[in-house]
Length: 131
Image (cartoon, rainbow, N blue to C red; front, side, top):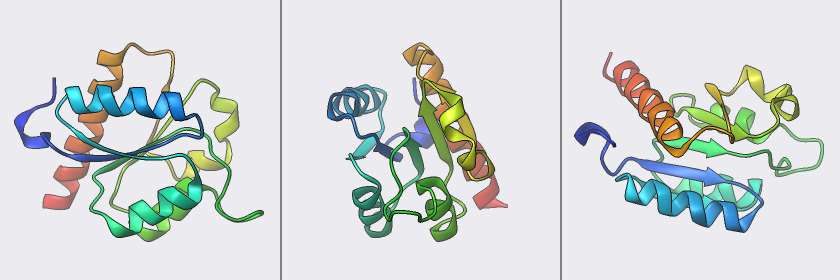
């Protein structure tokens, strides 16, 4: 499903539900991506800072610090070129993050649509980086 240009792109998946993370990791791996996972904003930030990340796929997680910026805002401040996709069943949870996220993907989409959305974001970010 993934084109050769994006094969082995690194995707950071963030969700406080461990079962969802493991499933997403396996789906992404099968599609040719390398998936790193984090079950908290704090862990996501550690991974994001320490690794090359091509895209972040995040569910709603609490900010790393009480009253601090949302995870999407913090990620964009650190590396604005990395696309952030919000992956959630409830778009109303993401009102604050709409300014920072590149796209909202509902958890209700089939896997092939999720993978197409990821591919589009990666293609767009690589085109921008090449410009």
